Length: 337
Image (cartoon, rainbow, N blue to C red; front, side, top):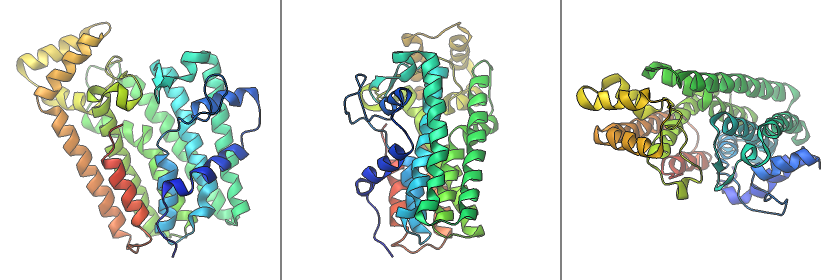
C-alpha cells in the first residue's frame, strides 16, 4: 500500500479542489479571505486553519486500504462545510478574531458574512460531486452526500443547543454531550465515515470509524473549552468569547454539577450578572482551576482520545495503512490552539 501521507504532500491539491468549485465572484473573495488565502485587500496570504477534518478523511481512506488521492474532493467538501459553520458561528458568537485576523462579519458586516457562509455550504456540495471524476462509484457518492447532509443537520442542531444553553442556569453532562455530538463530533464522524467509505471499508469498520469520530469530537471540544478559558490569545488566534457569553463549557458544566459552598455561590454570582467583563472571566477561570475542573477537563479529553484509538485498533487496519490516522489523533491530542 501507499506510504503514510504527510499533510504538506496534499495541501496544494486540497486547495485546488476547493478552488475548482469557487468561481471568480466578488462574494467568494470574502470566502477566500476567511479561508486564509488572501488578505483584506485581496492580496495572496497564508493564514489557513489546521485542516484537521480533511486530514482525518484522507487518513481514514488510506487506513481502509484506499488511495487518498481519490478522496480529495470529499476532503475539500468537509473543509468547506467546516468553514461555512465557522463563518456563521463567528456571527452568532460575535467573535472579532479568527486565526489572528478580523472575522468576516467584523470586517464586512453580518449580512455579508451570512452570504459568505451560505456560498461555502453550496461549494461544499459541488466539491463532493467531483468524486465521480476520481472514479468513485455513483452509489458511493450518494452515500457520502447523505452522510455529509446528515452531519450538517446535526451540526446546526448542536449549535442551536449551544446558543440555547447560554440562558440556562445549569446544563447536565448528558446535555453537554448531546450538544457536542452535533456541534463538533458530527462532522468528524462524517469525515472518518466518508474516508473509510471511499477507501472501501464495509459496515462493521464504518461503524467503528463513526464511533471513533464521535470520541474525537468530544475530546476536541473539551480541549477547545479549556483553551478558550485558559489559552493565550496570541497562540489560539482568537478571542476567548465563550465565557463572556456564559456558554456552558465542560469545566463550567462540571462545576455546576458538583461545586459547593462559597466557590459555588461566587460562580452563581458571576453567572447572574447581565454580562461578564474580562476581570469576571479571569475570576471564573481562577475559581474553576482552583477547584480542579481544569485538570478534570484535561483528563476527560484524554480518555476520549484513548477511546478513539481503541475504536481504530479494533478495525484491524495494518500498521502501515493506519499510520497517518494514528498520527493525526496524536497531533490533535497535543495541540495548543
